[in-house]
Image (cartoon, rainbow, N blue to C red; front, side):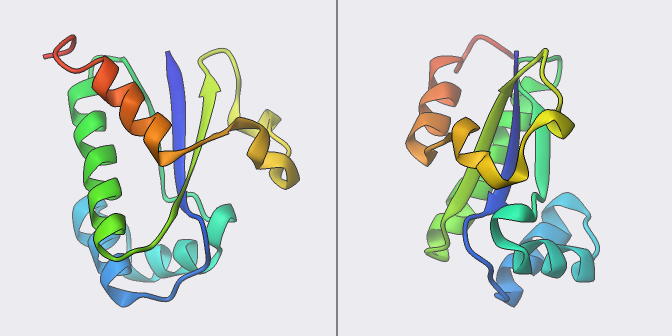
Length: 116
């Protein structure tokens, strides 16, 4: 099982993105704006993949990717193994466990149809 966290790769003050997070994930508008303004340190979505709710998490991630792509706003994806904890990561070296958007989508595509 993998754990995924997503942040905006660059700080942004785009109100449409903040509204998306607010409406889609029930985040406060101010909270979503704050997370987005923090860029790669402002993780706004975290989940475990391949659990009982995998289908929902997959949809969430695909919706995030699609919306941010429509806004031409890059994302940062961090992936850790099930045995790791987020607090164990060095915030200054997140690139060690970052994956590309393509890798994230390939991971989701490889499990398509296995969880329904």
